[in-house]
Image 1 (cartoon, one colour):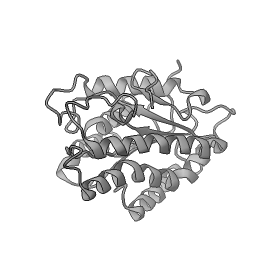
Image 2: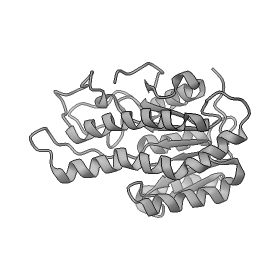
Image 3: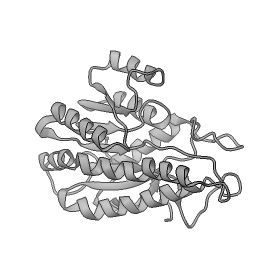
Length: 259
C-alpha cells in the first residue's frame, strides 16, 4: 500500500462529522495536498466555526459555499476551484454531503423522499458533471495509464444500509428514504465508473462504517466507530485503490460490501 499523495481534494459536507474529519486528516498528512477544498452550505455560519479555525492555521484550506442540490452553487464552486488549481485540475472529489429522515415505511412522505434523494443521489451526480473537466485535467497531468486516487478519482460516501442484500439494522431504523438514496448512489457510482473510465478517473463508493456523528447516532443505539477510526481507515483504502477497484462498493477497511 502506497502513501496517499493528492495534489488537491474537495470534500462536500465538510463542516461536521465525517466530512470535517476528512479535512482534518488530509491537512495532517505527511505530504498534505496543495489545496484542500471544504464545501459547506454556510462557510461563515456557526456550524462552520471549526472549519474557519482550521483555515486560519492552514493556508492550503479553502472553504467553499456549496449547496450540492443547487446547480448554480455547484457550478460556482467548480469555477472557484478551477481558479486555484489551474491546469493541474482537481485530483480527488469526495461526495460526502448527506441527510437522513427518520421515517418508517409507513410514515415516509413524498417531500422527505424527494429531499433526501436530491441531496444524497442527485447532488453527487451534479458534482461529478460540474467537476469532470477539472478531474480530466488532473488525470491528463498525471503520468501512467493506471487509475488511482493520486491521479483522479470520485469517491461517493455511501452506507451499508443501502445494500439491498444486507438490509442492515432494519429492525432498529427503517430510514426508508435514506436506504433508497444510498442504493441509488451505488448505482450512480457504477455508471460514473463506466462513463468516466476513458478519462482516467477512478470511481468508488465507500461505506464509512456506523460512525459516532450527529447523523450516525440517530438510532436507539450508539454508533461503535469514531470519526477518526472511520476516516483513518478510509484514507488507507483510498491509498490502495487501483483500476481493478473502480466501480466497486467497499467499506472503511477495504472489504467488499454486497450490493
